[in-house]
Length: 305
Image (cartoon, rainbow, N blue to C red):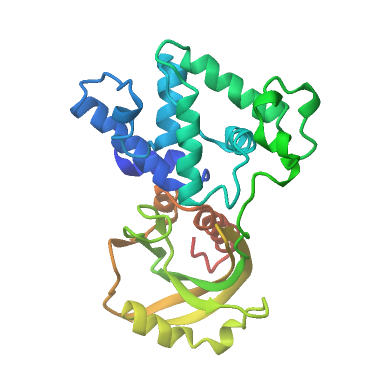
């Protein structure tokens, strides 16, 4: 993994989402070789110095792999700890997360088996202290539970209001020139950084959930303004719908033929033949577009793909 090119790592990770995890795994593997000579750190503090390893993952590795006394707070133990301490307020707030971690740490001793204790706590939370209809009558730690004592088990843990989904309209520009298609590598700070994708126009949020047709979007003008080249809309493929975090995206697919101009785009970009697109790491929608282009334009006398 440490020796693999990042693009190969991303290509193998394709379709799993959360691509930053793949990049962090890759960088962590490199640091294990470069800094730690291949020896895996053992303590939670050392583990958190590796990319992508946060407090929970560090505690899980330290306790389960090395049997060290290291706390963990995840969904099941968070619920268990919140009820044991009768924690009030949003359990995910910074203040309450600190309180939960402090409580979790207090359960570990220097001589105890960190892995066995964490496994027992997770199973207790997952099988007895369940979100709904908890088994308080058979709970082995009921006598220590403040929420049970106060009769508020069904009210804890508390969480803030969930963020509502936002409808967003985007358009993928499928620009072809002499049998090749334009793709760009997504720069740092953007969704799916490091992957390749067809250029996209962000057309804003939708209030009524209905996206306008492409005919009213002046795509040729937008193409010139945002990417410096001129082109003509030649076809429109079936609209895609997908969800990313709290955004519901309606993605139009505009097939355009390059006419003239010098490309001006942030980050690397290239014109690729169909077989080259098969080798690039793409987001799920990008891979679906490639398959759609292949089905649509690989046959007949007007072959483009």
